[in-house]
View 1 (cartoon, rainbow, N blue to C red):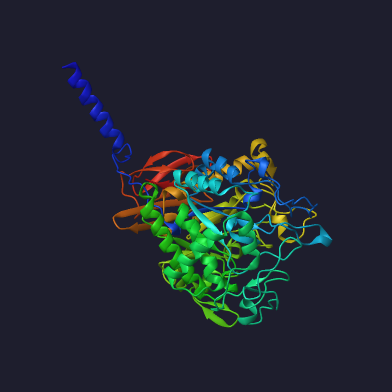
View 2 (spheres, helix red, strand yellow):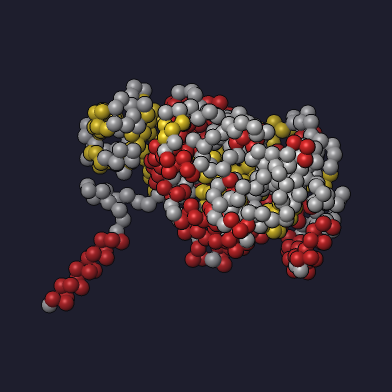
Length: 556
C-alpha cells in the first residue's frame, strides 16, 4: 500500500512539473514563439568583444605598429562562447547574435603613412572559404553556433559580396575578370553607386558579370599550398552542375557563403553594402541560403530550434522606415524587400529618438502593419560605422534603451550600448572611435558615466530585454496608446492560436499609481510587472502598483 501511494505521488509531481506555466489564479501562460519581427539582436565586432584565447592573437606576422584602435586586439570565438555560456546574452533578453564577418582577412596592412590598419573588423576578405585564425578555428566557430543554439539564440552571419580586401604587399589583387580597381564611386547615379569601388584600393567584385571565369590565381596558389585545391574544385564543380548558374564571380561567393549555413545551421545573414551591388544578387543568395538551411535542418532534426525559415536583413545605407518598400538608389527605385530581404536596417530611428515616445511608437507600428506588413526593420541607435550615432556622449542612456527596446520592429544592441562603452576615443581616425574594446571592467566597478553606473544601466537593459524576449507583441505587435497622462500603451500580437498582450507605462510618477489596462486584460487577471517584480490583480480595469521606478512592464 505504501509503495502504491508513493508511486501515485511521484506521478502527480511529474505531471505538475510538465504542465504549462500558470499564475496563482490558474491562468495558463503559453510559451512565446520566436519571431524575427521581435528579435533582440546583439551586434559585436569579434575582435573587440572578449579574448578567450591569447594564443591566436597574432597571425600572418601582423606585428606592425598600427594607428589607435586599428589593429587586432584579441577578441575571438572562444571569448564569445564564454559569454554565451555564462548567460550574458540570455540575461539581456538577446535571442539573435550578429557578429562581424568570419572570412580570413588580408594578411597585410594599409594606411602606412598614418599608422597601419589591419582587417580586424572582418570586412576585408582574402578567402571566403577560410575562417580568420585571429578569431579561431572552424571547429570553434561550430562550437559557437552550437553554444548559441543551446541557449535559444539565433546566429546571424555578416556577409560581403561587394568587394575583396585591399591590395597590400602580402595580398595581390584578384584577377581582372573578377574585380575592378577603378573607377571609384561618386554616388551621382545608379552606375556610380554600384559599378565602382567604394573607396580607393578596395577592389570591387564584378557582380554584374555573367562571364564564366576560373578561380583567381591567388586562391589557386593559396589552396595548393594548403593541400585543398582538389577538394575545393570538386565542390565547386558539383555546385555549378547542380545549380545551373554560370561560373561568374558572384556565384562562386554565394557557394562559399552558403556552405556555412549548410554545415552549421546559420540562421540568417546580415547583408553588407546591399545597395552597392545589383539587387537581383540578393534574391539569388537568399534562395541558395534557404535551400542550405533546409538541408541542414533535414540532416540535424534534433538541433532545429523552430520552423522559421532563413532570415535576411540588408544594410541599404540611409534606408529609413518612412521610405516604405521603395528606395531611391541613384535614381533607380528598388524594392529590396522583394529581393530576398526579410528586413532592412533602419537608419531613421536615431533621428526620431528625441520625439515623444508615442509619436515614435505609433509611426513605426502604423508603417510595419500597413506598407511593410509581412516584412520588418532592424532598429539601431549606434553601430560600428555610423559616425553620427544617437547619444554619442552617452548622456541619455536610459532613454536610448527605452526607445530602442520598446520600439516596434526588431532591435539591435551594439556591444557596449548596455554598459555605456565609450564612443569617443581621442586620437582615433574615422570609425575606429566607435570600436573600442568591450568595457567589462566598467561593469565590475560600476563606473559612472553622466550619472548612471555601467552595471545599473546593464540591469535596465536586462529588464527591458527579457520582457521583450518573453513578449513578441513588443516588437511584432500593434501599438495603441491607452492614456496620455500618465503615458501608458498596449501592444497586441497574434500568430495562429497564440495571443500575446502587454501594457507598458513610461515616465510615470514614482510611488503608488493606477495603471489602466482597459480593453487588454480582464478583471481578475493576475499580471506581473517585469520591472519591479511585483504581481498585481486587475480590478476595475486597472492595476495599482507602488514602486520606486518610473516604468511598468505588465504581462501575464
